[in-house]
Image 1 (cartoon, rainbow, N blue to C red):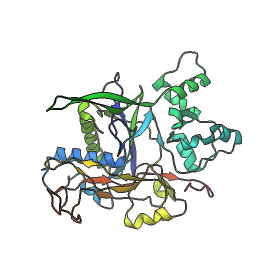
Image 2 (spheres, one colour):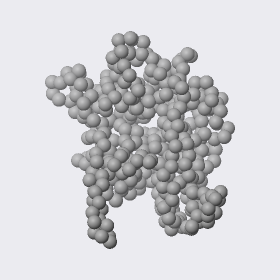
Image 3 (cartoon, rainbow, N blue to C red):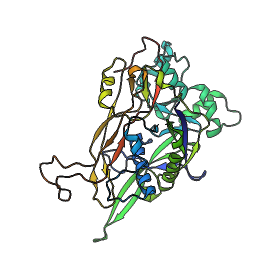
Image 4 (cartoon, helix red, strand yellow):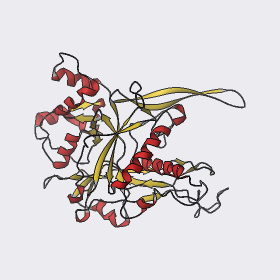
Length: 385
């Protein structure tokens, strides 16, 4: 039986907020995102494992850590990194319409649902189950986050409650309190030849006190727990995301006492993705099945490999977090690992270094393995297309 464990990513020191640079493809350093996708995290874990195993960077063998993920029974699957408020993990908005029977409440929300990106565990489960939302959600982060009134009590410890403050006053103050903010940090570079200076800015996401990131891991083999936690600890020391030399991306991990979702997706007829997903050939039909609703994201970018020049990875298209898929024979989709190393074998012109070969002798992995939560919606609760 799979075991689902939630990890909290926190700053190394309590007095210092968690600050990271998660860049966006095709956008300069000045932009940053508040989350890190599962395919990027898996690539970082593989790179860390290769370093730990002492592999020759010019060799062709993948790390021993990565090999079991290439088969039909990966030892674990993990989510993307999601924001959290204290112990409340925010989850991607499912691609399902919420059931809001009260016309006044629907009118008060208006088009706010189009801005929504993350929901609290209670709202996530309610939307997936097709349950009626009867109480107005507490709307945070400019409309990007919804939580229930009951869950505001769970974050009082993280954000603090002023003595004598009523529930309404506390919720109103919460709506103005950012969970994270994107800052632009000025930098100057000096040309080595002319000594001319150039100004540029780097975006970073900074989480408020008591806030941070959360990672969900489903262990299909608990013997892998110690190895993954070691790699996460080492990643916390070396940093994740970009601009690590500037001090961004370092963190410490802590196991959460309770997870935000159940791990019983194996019995569901539909599931919602908590990770990015790359379907196998036999799973492509799930995208066409009734009740499936999904968004696509194209992933590219650059790779770094010791002994090789910087190159662009092959692009792949993945299903985004929050997508809803039918589950074939009540089995959740599995997905696959893709090797995205540059490939010049079909190029019309030979590469100046690699000719008509591949850009590196070793594979460059991105994960499209699916971590899912069950959709237990009643009959007639259909997905958005």
